[in-house]
Image (cartoon, rainbow, N blue to C red; front, side, top):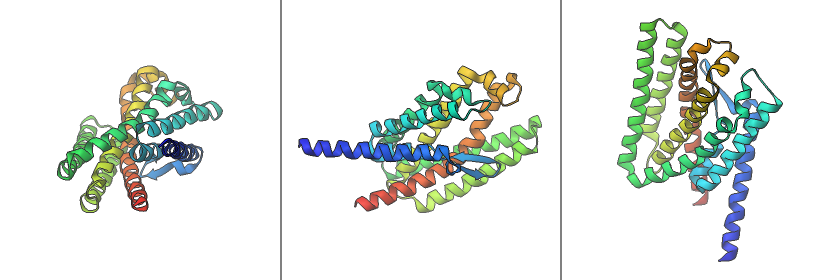
Length: 251
């Protein structure tokens, strides 16, 4: 029994090392960013979600810790006008640790709901995203925010529709639980990081971007929408396929 526990512990540590290293590699190379229309979607958080789903909250949290610490290192060694925000562990580490923990418990909870309820939750999230982006188009036209913002929202709606159709046709059984875990795990990263930036460094961060500090909330919120939606879509597709492949391999 002791040997079995030790073996399990070594296995989990190995997974933490491999997925943590992958997260660092994605952050240090262009592989961590995928161009989607006018934005770039990061996939650096994906190993954290996979670790949380497959191996539990402790493994997911440790991989997230590695991800967060690597963000601090990168901000310190390769500074940009706004990288100072990632020197703060509340911005760079805390949300990343929570990614794997949230992903695990959401996955576990969604599995317990059953297939029909999980599919219903997926549809609700899907419709909610489309509705919100549609409101963004309406608001952009009403406030004359410029054609760029409107086109961005249209592209994001198209991507969301494609993703939703893909999900309805291809995902069955526990795959829907993985999808929901991936969505909320990604949101934990996006919302967590940007919320901390806003509350701690909001005006200074926006000033570093060369924007009006008085528009901090609107600008940071806009970053969350334009980057967050593609990250959800791409992250979910990758996580779902990787988890399915690994589960099939284990079987």
